[in-house]
Length: 437
Ligand SMILES: C[S@@+](CC[C@H](N)C(=O)[O-])C[C@H]1O[C@@H](n2cnc3c(N)ncnc32)[C@H](O)[C@@H]1O
Image (cartoon, rainbow, N blue to C red):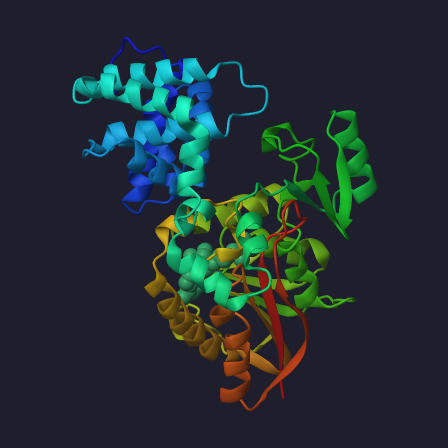
């Protein structure tokens, strides 16, 4: 724990908390959980500052590690190393209009190291390292650019996978994944029109552009509590690419009463969209019971209802509530677990948490889920296979495999692979659509 002498509003305090979160990420914890643990006793302002620092550090992890390897030849204690990684990220990627100078960053990083008994001995070294970075920044940065992990800020296997899949666009894709995605809203047209919502946002000082049938892209991200009508379910936060799912499932003129299975539902983003669009009957299934409350929270805020079940999509007889009732679904959305390689601009930790071997395991799991769900689909019904990945093994290759193994599956039109672009409107997603013959 930080010493009581370190003011919670100081940059040094936030650097300590961010470094703790960074340490957990490098041990395999997802960044949001790592931050929640690291900032559990923080006042809100310190939590926000630590979050900003930790995201900045994770985004720059590959290059900051390479820089540190050049700057320090001896072994460093983990916490010292992580404070330095956070400080380097801040020096290289300062927030717009930052109220502090580079030397303040150095002083505060040294302060953060000096304030803890177990790290205090490294304060002189930390000071020397950061000051040398400021002096030799250009030469050091040029030196690390030769290492792909440092150049692109992704693990090597990830870079190779993207390069192999997209030989003509891999650099653009890696850069796009390293940019910050826009904040996009989905308007709940049961409650308010898109034009009215846009006007309400403008009145609250927020510029928003219409980028889809019910999608508004904000010029500046804001905390959700500041969005007019958020608590009343006027809007949800959802990427424009994710907003393609519900219309694809329901078609242009959805008829009331359709039986829809949202097979991998938490946190319920697409469940809500399906129910906003039409009076359909949605079964929202989720295997992770810790994520199920999020489905209820979202539905309650939107004023909508679904039949929420807990269970494995790959084992319908075991779903909570007595298992699948045997009445086939008219539509199934299989928004399967995946690498999440398409949403890296919002989740910069994903690339460091995944291992190359995870992909083959995910492919097997996606196939198991697909095959089981197909048996619950009505003849003439449609299944939408969706991922937030850009890796072909999870996407087009899966769709082709499915067509091969299920002779009663007819491929219908769907968006296929969506790729993110730098500053682009949507994340990377994949959609395939099958009809049962
Ligand atoms: C991509 S996320 C779904 C996002 C959600 N459709 C939305 O739009 O908000 C995949 C979800 O599937 C769940 N899941 C993973 N394996 C599953 C399985 N075998 N059966 C059901 N759900 C599963 C995960 O816990 C996760 O919540």
